[in-house]
Image 1 (cartoon, helix red, strand yellow):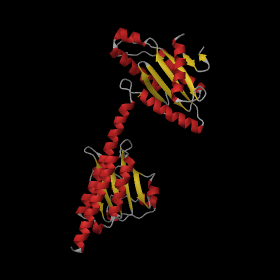
Image 2 (cartoon, one colour):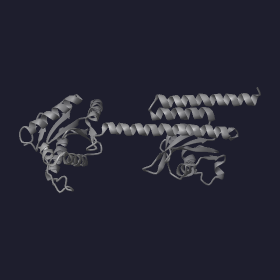
Image 3 (tube, one colour):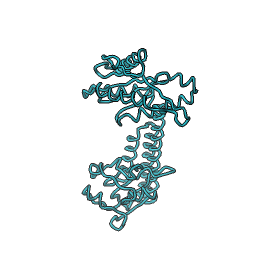
Length: 350
């Protein structure tokens, strides 16, 4: 066997080994970061560039950010963002076409901005799109590769790795959507009770570690059964959805709203003591008092709520106990006046 034939055979063996490792990563893990890291490491092992990176498209901002960057400039690239269309990577993201530029200074699409920020000198760029059927998801970029050994076989191999990366990204996003469906209530769009307890566990741990308080509001609608009995369950569901929207509109971005079940809702207020939480509870109570629901159906329904309030760690120290305390205070209101607020260790608001 000639040296050239042996080198070619060794190259093919290396390619098969890399494909095997990448396929194994894809089938054994749903963690996008680790799969992409494996792909990028194998790519570097094969092509040996100075710097290599995966840029992801941020569709909301219409730009690219460095999701993975390895090499001398990797730290400097962490905060760099490129507009779609800017530079060679931006061009590839915009047009979905691969670009192989042996001398970047002869290409008008090259942007010096990244070199100026990283203090590196780019000589050549190999840039391939990572694309799904509908759009470009990102760009894989190799800098300063030895172009003498970058032929058709290498192009095919790099394209295959880009396809693997696209599969990993699409799979991860599909899983993310499924997870969103499993933690979201269909009727109101709020989080469901399953997600409530997971979130509370995290909040108890965080608040315990950093010495924070947090407060839970347990909300039960008054006389909701009469709505179902009078107007039917479709109107009842519409009313729940509108009330869910009203609750969410009263909260901060860091707050959580859950449909606990039936006509019960729970609000979690992180880093919030009892007095501050009472401001929110009063606001919710007063908003319900002054709001009319199902107006499109010309029903103009008005509904009130009994609200229970409990604060970690003063009233309870576990997720189930904090819910139980808030629930008990809600029932205290329900069994007396309704349309009011019950506060753990204080009783019903006067």
